[in-house]
Image (cartoon, rainbow, N blue to C red; front, side):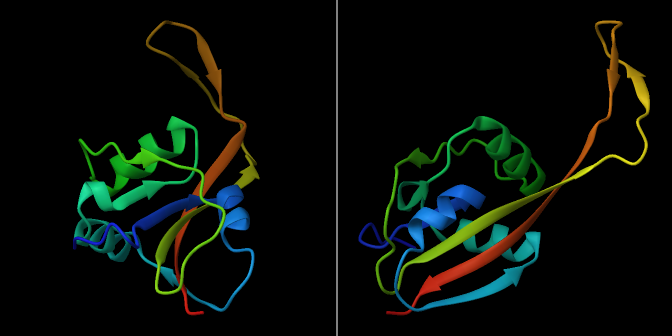
Length: 126
């Protein structure tokens, strides 16, 4: 899909609250497969990453098997009518168990949190 006027926005928890500041929006939860399909509908130049931090990008894109893509970062403060966004919602809970493992450097690492990610699709209607 070639549409530089209304690029697909990739958001996280904090960038979503900045982008959705006024207007009417339609929102729906999505599976990872649906998320991947939407991202693949757009050319790489038509996708803007609105969050910083490589960790989320590295983890989620690897999980979705979207490799070799380096989406431009841009701070967006308002979606335009008809524009679509995918939000990677991060949900962190404390770990009920704290197993200790040996790393490849022969040091100990302890699990302290469970990190969950789910996806949401948003369209600005008006």
